[in-house]
Length: 287
Picture (cartoon, rainbow, N blue to C red):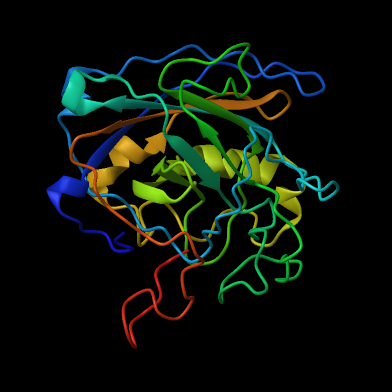
C-alpha cells in the first residue's frame, strides 16, 4: 500500500464530508446518526488515498468507544465527537458496502498517539512514551456492528471518540483505514484516508475547551491550507462539517465511495518504519 500522495486509479477512492447529527448530553449517550446518502456525482470523483503515516498499529481492537484503554484506565478527556463513516461501492450504483473493517486512529487532546514508544519530532506535549496504551484506536465492520447506533446500518460504522489535538507540522486530522480481511484477519485489500475539520471549528475547540486551551499556542500552528497532506483538490471531500457545541459535543459524518471491484492495494499489518516511509534513505511520511 502506498504511503505517498499518488496512487494508480485502481487504488483510487473518493470521500465526501457531510453534516452529522447532534450529540446529546449525558453519560455515554450519543444520539443515533441517520444514514447519509452519497450522490452519484460524488461517487464518480475518484481521488488518491492519503498517507497512512507512521502511527498506524494493527491493534485489532474491535470496539466503537475509543476513549479509554481496552485493558482499563487511560480515559482521554476532551470534547466528545460522534463520528459516523458511510462506505459505498461506486462500481455498484453507490450501494452500501457491507463486511469491510473501518479502522480509525488519531492523537489525543495533547497531540499524542497511543501505543508508541516515542513520537516524531513535532509531536504532542506531556511525554512521548505511550506504548502501554491503546486509547483512540479501534475498528468496526460495516453493516455488522451497530457502533453507537441502536442496530447495524448497511455500509456504516460509528464511533465515540474526542476531538483530536494538534501537533506541530500537521493540521488536526483523523486517520481512516478501510480493509477487506481474510478469515485469518489478514488484510487482502484496503486503503487509507484522513478526515480534517475546518480551521474555524478547530480554533473554536482549541480556545474554548479544556484541556486544549491549556496548551501553548492555543490554536493549531498548522492550518488546513498549510498542511502537507491535505491537498487543495482533497479539501472539498476531506474537510467535514460538524454539528453540536462545546458543551454537548459534536457529531460528524464522513462518506467514502470506493470501487470495490478495483481496490487491490495490499499492505503489511505491521508498524511502518519511522525512518523509511519514503523508501531507502527517504523522508518518513507525515504522521
